[in-house]
Figure: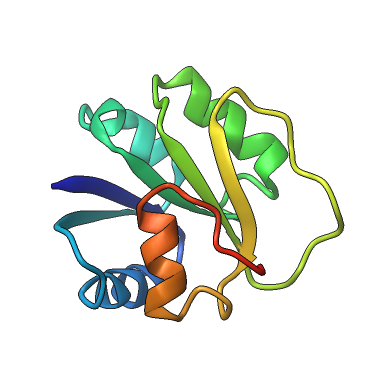
Length: 125
């Protein structure tokens, strides 16, 4: 079973992502955190395989602020970066394995979700 954390201040994202995962082969356990700090304070943080991370999760306004916090708390898995709108080219620098950023609307497809849950970039996005 792959352990997946959703870090987003909007709980609806957890509902959407875990619902999409029901249409993907495999077994996934989802947990929701409303902030990067809440994730890091949980003793389970280092046990996740994958994190879906929203671009703006208070008090952080962007990945440049939130990714270093994830690194410092011991998470070393895959981060799928989510955003409500397309960003310019380039990715933030991080030692974590980054996928995206993906627009939230783009990943609402079980085929795309299958790629992401398996730690692979979604083709064409």
